Amino acid sequence: MHRLGQFAQPDPRPRRVNVERVGINFKEGDVKYRLSLFVAVCLILMACASAPVARQIQNSFPVDKDFDTTWQAVIETFAELNLPIMNMEKASGLITTDWIKLDDPQASDCGKMGMMSSEVGRRVKFNVFVKRVGNVSEMKVNAMFEALVQTYGSHVIGTSSCYSTGKFEKEIYDRVLAKTK
Image 1 (tube, rainbow, N blue to C red):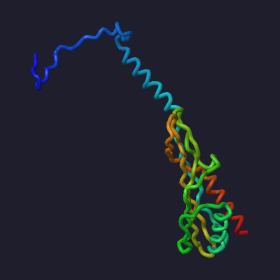
Image 2: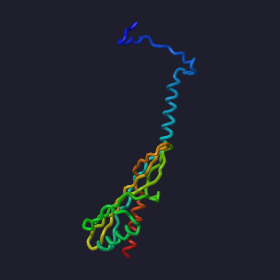
Image 3: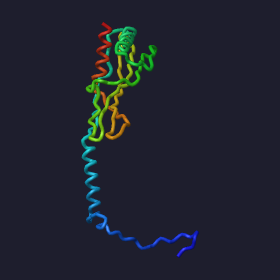
Image 4: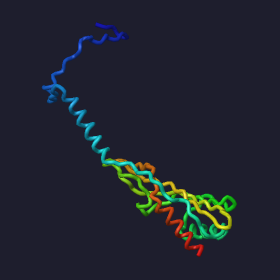
């Protein structure tokens, strides 16, 4: 009933499909039930995860040696551990590292991953600040921790922030302190 170049108007009456004929058997409220079930399963899977816990840690330590001795001990510690130095400036007393693979899971709290993701590693980036306090010195270790996280079914690795337990900072301090004796 239409001529070439003109478009037919859609039929304003809705088409009826016999779903029983094609094998689909939807009952009243079935879609809502399935959606609710899907949401509940997702929430249960996410509920298995827990957030990391922030805590007060000691990251500032007294060193009963002069600045130059402490600075030298910090440099020797970095060299001994083969730590990648990003910045080192003796005048300001600051040494910073690049990201380093962390093998000790007790050094940071990254929480618990959910069922749909897994932790594939941890890393730390930190700085050491040495300052003069009279004729002795003080050393401060500031560390940032991250968990490397992979979602199941994906090759993409993301990161998740973690909190320090204080163990890493204390270990750096103990190594530096041992070199000052």
